[in-house]
Image 1 (cartoon, helix red, strand yellow):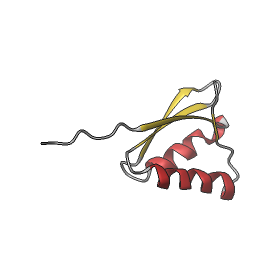
Image 2 (cartoon, rainbow, N blue to C red):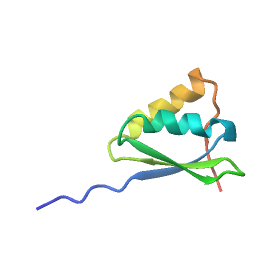
Image 3 (cartoon, one colour):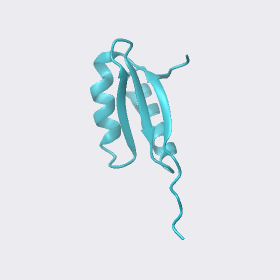
Image 4 (cartoon, rainbow, N blue to C red):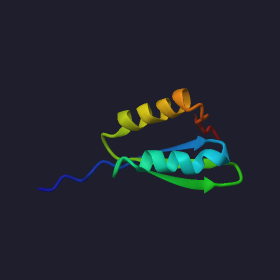
Length: 78
């Protein structure tokens, strides 16, 4: 029997629009771990889809980007 894969984790973040491309390129460079989609360019909202079992690594990358690169990435609360 084939096991159904777990759904991807989806989180919406607010960033400065000038950083969207950098964040997308950085996270998507880890092949198959995450996809970044701009959901509202005027509000600079991005949605990050994280593959199962890759959450820890992607959250470490986000933490690195915020702490070492000085780019503010914060979870969007409706």
